[in-house]
Image (cartoon, rainbow, N blue to C red; front, top):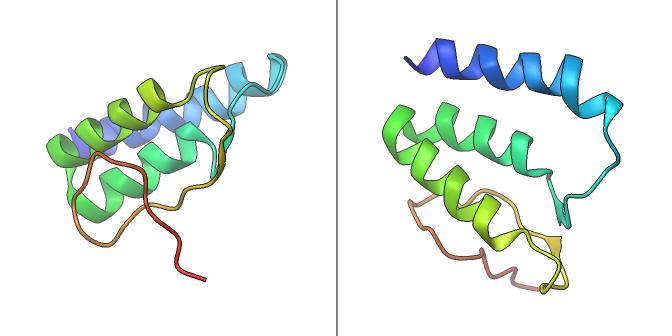
Length: 81
């Protein structure tokens, strides 16, 4: 399942995303975030984190840097300066 999902994400990034206008408000992009989360936490936890990130990515947020945390969380990662 994990490899299948990563293949779907790669297909999306290569064949769909590049032909649509950029709309993600975060860095890394939502598709990269989901890919990293699935690789780091496995299929189910990674999908939950990715879906939570996609829900957070909307026109009412400022966006910015939001890397994948090292512990499972569905909330925005607070960056320490």
